[in-house]
Amino acid sequence: LSEISRVLKPGGTCIATIWEEVNMCDLCMKTMEEVTGEPFQMPFDPVAWAGGRMDPLIADAGLTLASGHNSLVPFDFNLGVARGGEDLSFKLGMIMALPKLAQMGKVEEAKATYEKHAKAFGLNEKGELVIAQDYRLLVFKK
Image (tube, rainbow, N blue to C red; front, side):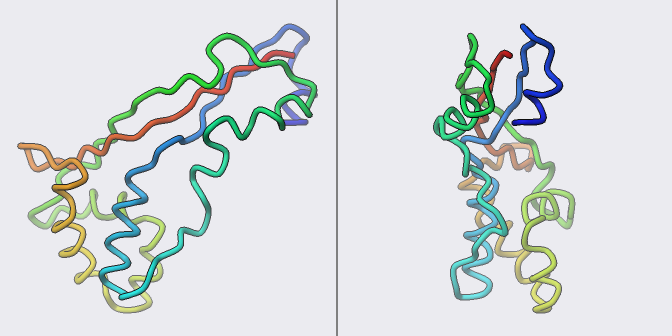
């Protein structure tokens, strides 16, 4: 934020986004927990700055909150076909865990588990996994 403050023209506006709700991560963690038998921790917290937790940092950088700040925006993330051998949905949905799955030799088991849980996370009539997620707008001025 200090770099944004440095390069933003006086009166300029910055619009950025952060994840508020990432159900795709919940599907990944549920799949991994079932496959490994233990809770899976993401390598980072995708919602660490959600819920307005960026606001003090924005102010500390000398920036001012602007109209539209902290607006929630729903985002339906279509991961593609989740069943029938299509790997794209699985690879996108499990991207944070793929190295561990490969190391454990459990990729195929994880695919079957992922497909089993897909319906609860937004599997539509076309077989596509469309996961509802939300992001938050950060809008601030210099």
